[in-house]
Amino acid sequence: MVSTRRNKYNQASQGDEQEGHEHPLVERRRRWSTLLRTHHYQPVIAEVLAGELLKYSNSTLTLPTSLSSTIQECVLILASAPLIFAAAVDGTLAGRFLTDSDLRHEYAAIQERAHIQPSIYIHLLVDEQGVAPTANQYLAIRDVVLRYISAHPQRQDTELAWLIDNVSSPAVARSASASGHRKYLWTRHRSPQHEATLLRFCHGILERWTQTPQSQRDVPFAYPPGECGYSINSHIRLAQHRHRQSSNYVMNLTEDICSYLHASKQFTQLFRMHQFIIYLIFRPQQAAIAEIFCSGLLQVWIEDGGGFNAYPAGRSVASATRVSHVEWKTHEEWASKHTRLIENVRLQRERLENDVLELEKEMEELWREALEDEAGGDGDDVKDLDYVPEAGGEED
Image (cartoon, rainbow, N blue to C red; front, side):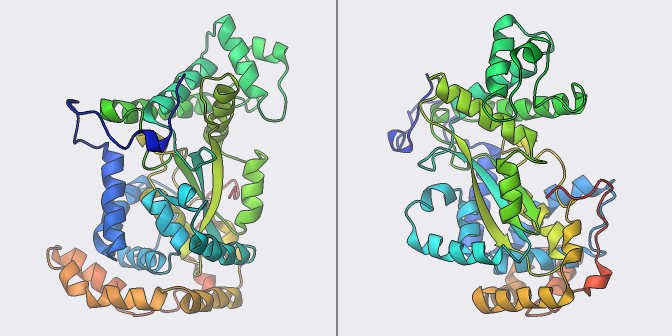
């Protein structure tokens, strides 16, 4: 049986040969969190974009024509980010939300705006107390995934698959499971792409477990596994995810496995996907960049064991073009009035000379260009969006 509670593990055992070495994902997120608490945007934006933009070198997604425009949008995102966003970056959102009245009060306003304003949402895998799984629990989830997707299952694996596939609707017949049907592998037939993605997911979990010091493997993750997405109406989109409509099969399979492990007494905790709306988009050119930047900042990719996102972000934001120019103006005015946007952008301009001191000349010029307009300007006209959605429509 694998069980944990955060308060049981305040002290790590001494003498572990890996003691003092954090998992790279944890080190990155902790460093970025510390920098953002002191409003030090430049190194965070530079590092996140360096990791994310490489994914689009051969993509049909068209990003802004200049890197300075992308940097500017990232600055505006961080400058206007609410407390809920900061808590997500810190890894404390799910737990704090249960007790922090200021956080919940601000979130009520964000939820209200999200009915009429495009936004970024996240799922976090935590229990009812906001506690994330441990490395050992995540490894146990991986082991079940591997049994579930096995091409040559043992009899007990077929029974396991049937139980998992019936945690949530639609139901799967026992005879279908016996003949090899797996809900989360099936499109019209067993999908090699789904199988390959789930194997990448399992590899990421193993990497995270391997690189976690042994003394820390029964300590809840400081940063819960997550999923990040964009929607023109996140309330509707999150309801669709909850009902498994055009949803993320890696995330959904993981949640069903957690329910199975809890029902079978292998986990004492019930881990579920907890949903939050963390950012309100107020410019049309932010839609793709916000999803890309937030996904990188929160490290939700399956390859690193950080979460459940398997495909590059920013590809399903076509709905942003349905928002009128007048509506975008209203959203930007709201951000200017109800967030620290103007104050934080001004602070970035004031600290610019120190921030660019050690940058190469080309990068220095990009940052100067990105911050040349104190309030961020009005951006490109909505008729001239920089984004071309991929064929196949929009899922988020």
